[in-house]
Image (cartoon, rainbow, N blue to C red; front, side):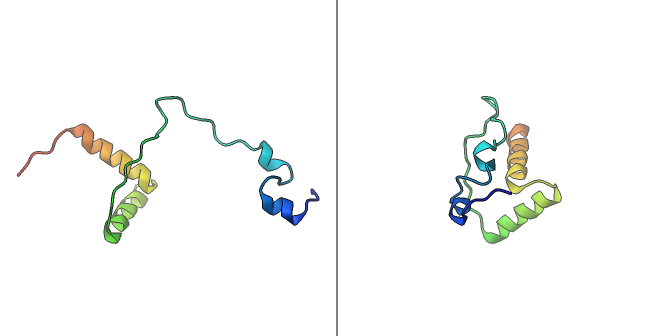
Length: 81
């Protein structure tokens, strides 16, 4: 067990030598990185419905929404009336 002062632990700079050496996941190659954000305003009820649909599909809401929107967009324009 390492002997560090509480300030050093709370500081976030040192945690028994782990934080400085830990690596995140590898970066995705160019073209696979998702850098664009689509913001959509929803009512509380709409958000709950989307969250429920995503949960039923065992996906997080963002992944479910992206997949669903891209699927609809790929099918082409909807017929009116």
